[in-house]
Length: 130
Image (cartoon, rainbow, N blue to C red; front, side, top):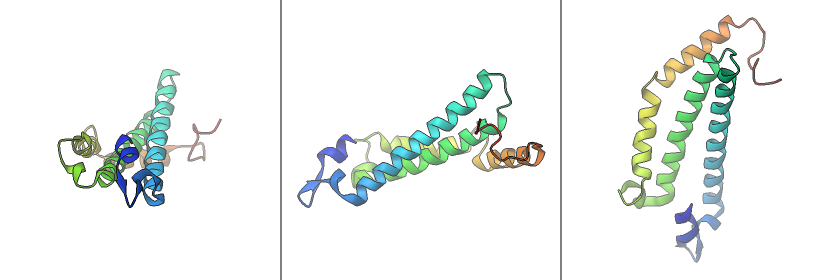
């Protein structure tokens, strides 16, 4: 964000360009939604309720969003995004690894779909509402 607030192109800060501002807004929404999904799964676990589906969803959403956000961050930084001058190049590599270990996101999708097949509540979001 600091870079977007400081760097200027075409006579204004890059954060003031609508296209980039929308990318940054999408990045923020992805981070906030991933955090909310994770907290929901953690609250279920803390309450002693079933949480494996929600944990799989949280892992999948958080890591997919992390990959998208870091990719967009590299784009925001332009050529600097690939250098070690900014930590985003490392974050992008770490985001990719997170999608793979502790069960790939494809495995998480399998866990989620199997849970849906076994669910007798008739609701896809049984624990999300109420």
